[in-house]
Image 1 (cartoon, rainbow, N blue to C red):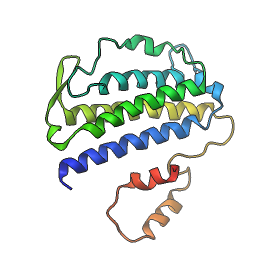
Image 2 (cartoon, rainbow, N blue to C red):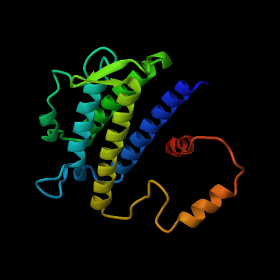
Image 3 (spheres, rainbow, N blue to C red):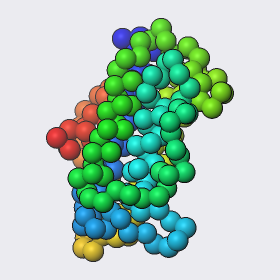
Image 4 (cartoon, rainbow, N blue to C red):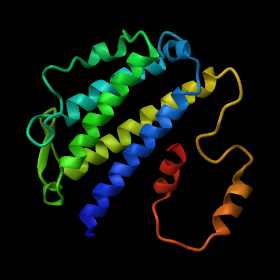
Length: 191
């Protein structure tokens, strides 16, 4: 596998990892908590999902050929929550991620240096992927933080549990050295 293919595979795994983390966080709260805000200036988990959905559809639809800020996108309305159920929330969540992952699957290694535009600003495909690979985990982190604050009972850690570093490291160092992506193990946990 060449460097370009390794990059594409790694980017896909990173996106899938954050998708999985977001789902694990949202599934720990009661459905009505997905719509709660902490104050007038904060967004509910549902609103964050709606924004991610809108961004993903805009950025990744016809990714290589049209500007990533589509004329049909109404970004401001993404912050006005009109999602009413957990099922609808997950439909939007999955639609956005499917658009992203489908676009990534369509990219070939010889297209990584092709220029794509977001608001008329040229990016290589690599830069456009990296831009979203920074943006989406930022919002998934918000989802996780909000879910932790809203959780009424104990939180199931999505990473190394509090006061669990020694045990986690002992387990890792008890195994032979291997070249592998940590995300493979994390994604297998969720299956």
